[in-house]
Length: 397
Image 1 (spheres, rainbow, N blue to C red):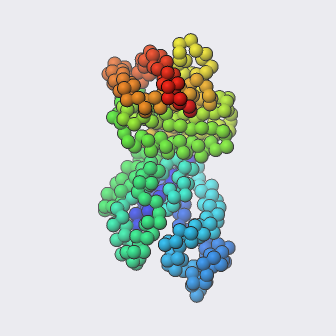
Image 2: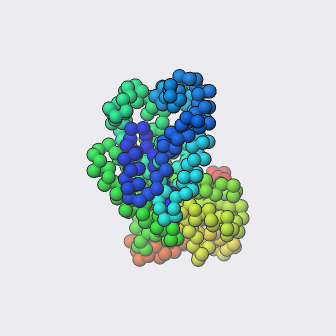
Image 3: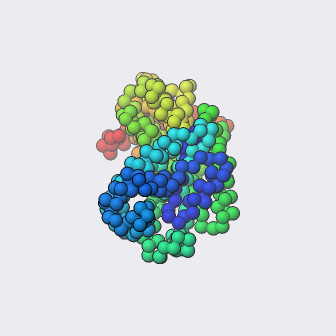
């Protein structure tokens, strides 16, 4: 099933988006609701909160005085961390139970306000962020929740900012306008990305680009997209001795490229990528192995082919094509992928030369395979130049 993390700052209107996704068939686990459940009277977390913050945060009927607690913790980072240390483990256990019971044929959405702050977005296939300007959020908190403006701004300041959220966002829903405008954005996301992505994950279908090679102008968003892929794969393969890097043209600022995120996973031994544990982790993260893509072109010509062997996985997300190249750490192919990227980053003339070649071959190639094969003679001439740069720059992986 597809796992989606849904987040947004306080007052952004995230609950509106969650309600729409639930209406259209997703199973939504609401972290705020779970947080309320674990501090109900008689629960261990409530007793721990009373012991830490005193009786002033407990109402006469034994329930938690949320407003009083908020006034204590939001202005004080240490107090906020103390509260999170009490409630966090109980919330995590309850969320794991609820998400573990989602039927396999439903999209699993985790509605979590602090998904970015806690780094939990790396465990889902996609992160959807609901955003709105700070002044709009403050006005909502004042009119809808009865907060003072100072209190509202204090709560907003205690959370991640929009720059941090955008870096983690695979999809951004602008909820600063009318409900109709917001609903149209969410509907498009649901129909064009979430439902097809879920189908691809469940049915084992790799998302593909059109076969005609098409270059895109440099996109500043490629860096964040690559970083998200790297972070998710690193989390999904934790404990397997791997290294993950964004490589390829989209990893080089200012370079034209096919709109594809290329990532390299370095493994201690290439055979590690054939193990069931590795393949299962890749499938859980939405990547499928391609059995006939196991060999790169050796450089220089005549070099041992085994130094350029790999495994290849393609992503299932129709909204973001991702190619994952798995190579043995220290092999010639693994080293060259990193060195070539850094050479292009540091040598503007080489970058422009490569861009000109790409544009020329785009116009002359009927298919992506033709385009890729036609670049190999240039790579053969570039290889010794990269090796010379490695020596001069004293570059290491």
